[in-house]
Image 1 (cartoon, one colour):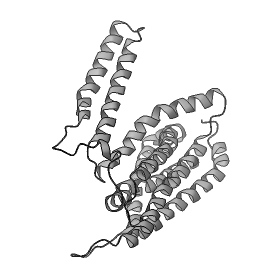
Image 2: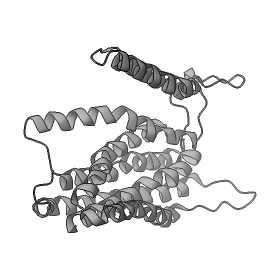
Image 3: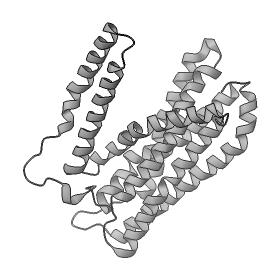
Image 4: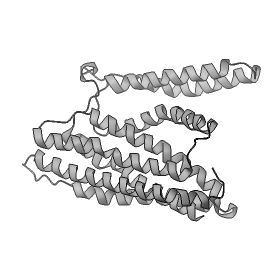
Length: 284
């Protein structure tokens, strides 16, 4: 149980950093970054229709069709191939919309979900590959890696803020793309591992209570994230324009602070990982 509480504390720190994606990351993108991933591909005329809405039909139809084929012939590979094909098509439609539709600071938060979808099968294969070779790391070590990546994800944005402060020009949105990639890689290391640890490490009669504690920690992280986000709060009086240099300096300070919080907590987690692993009594 003590090991579980420490893992929950790691989740609290991670999601405090993660929730900046809906706060300081959005305002920074809105004020000091370009928005379109590939500007030359963006459709500027009229109101282009998002093709990804077809996923609302593809997902249930693909599932129903695959289930029907499986019922008729359980040994057939057709259901799996059909479901994979539908998933790939939905992903392609989403990527198309990401590239050709005009983006805003708020809409770019889709990058988190996109990278989750892309990284999930890769990390599933990675953990399985490591396990087959006897190299799989413990849950505390994976969570420590997640914290480290969460902290490192702020480096691209801090560098982008410094670039804006020095040049006075908008930073490229690709800094944000890189930040999301690193952050979501960290989530792949920490979140699924932590959720599975709740059911494995909690005393049976309090499993539901500990699961609630996990989600309570993620909820409390939003309050902490808001407090940290205030460090980059910028008040622009009516009739005045944003001072780009001052704004960039505030954002850079916040992002470097988030980096050191993540890295510092990750170092502590790595140091504690061997002890936590012994306290888990063989739970993998």
